[in-house]
Length: 169
Image 1 (cartoon, rainbow, N blue to C red):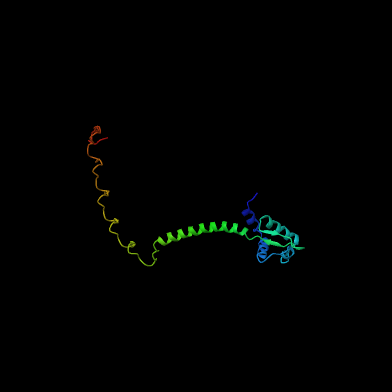
Image 2: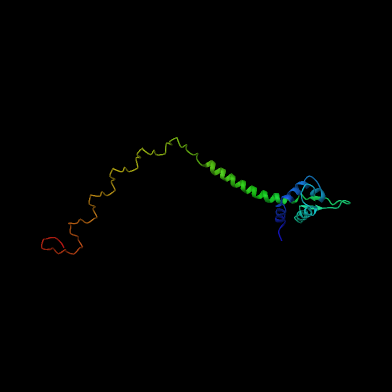
């Protein structure tokens, strides 16, 4: 069993029923008066009224020979409260987004250079130049202090036997 809010939204999902509700917002009407503008039978309008009546949107009363249909407007308060809750949440999110966007700096203009922005052709003082050797960077031709030299005897290495020509094998 669906709750009343679901029944109301379900009932109003049909455009013919929404038109009937729009007509009843002007004033009470009979089934024949409600069926007149539509290209449907009175029985079809009666079925639509039954759905609206089950949702609590309309009631029928008896006035002598007439059975006018009355719109129960207080049901719309239920829908309005539900919709208002989500509208307020959405507005709060948009306000927070507006605050974030207002706190952000303006975007720089693409044609205008910014004072803090490096220019593409201008060398920067902290940036290493490609041709200039750096003090901490090892040079390819220069022996490194920790690297063993090919002709130096290694302190922990076993002695290398010499061949007759005097070169190690």
